[in-house]
Length: 344
Image (cartoon, rainbow, N blue to C red):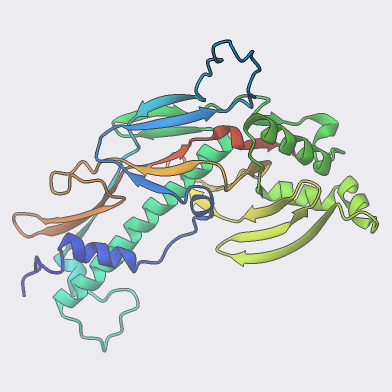
């Protein structure tokens, strides 16, 4: 049976293999970017809302009505990021034992090609999912996306403003130097509600922030006062790298830690998905979306989240499998999010 057997390398067959692949951690994407929309266009329009809490005005009955401006927003038309990665399969790869394969399996080269195809697709899918999670983290924690690679270098700005969406504590106000996490979180929650009317539901904490909250004297003092249930620190492992740290009852906020890292291709260093010194206040009620642009491949010009493709060299030396995607997380209601650097 020839290596380029049509069924094995059909895009539908490869999509089925993708659906069976193991999924890396993607807590941020699943929590805050669960809505997915695909576009059959190269560019995607990002609407970013700026809400004002206006009320109706009075007027005399015989006067003309007050003219009301529509809710404000601005639109950014941009190209999503584009991901196109491939892996080769050569004859030598099909003649040697695969990882986990015993000497008694006696797989044919075609059977081994089918297994290798599944492994390669799973690896490419894992890389894309991890990149999407990093993009979600960057959007949430910085309010920007930096899309940099061969032939591409641009920044998408969701409108975070210093001292409004981004706070930086200093000196004795820092949580590991005498600051009060309960008071700060309560204040920031009120600010979010004031500017957009949405209550934060999650506080995502970096590793140093979790330690600072637990060891903070003001938090411990209030937790020890049994007459006032100001908060509860009770760690639970929720799986998938997520830990529930506790609840600030006054703020009605659940605190979470997200233990996930990635290797930055720029410097090859392992980095935390959540900055260690930062806390994010966010809401699952805020309008967000995971957008996907057009797949720019003549074999699959379509609006889809993934497109697998394969081809063989003319002389039969190698076959390549490729996976493409054009993801773009979109913070439509950026005013519902706030980040703060709270420890040194």
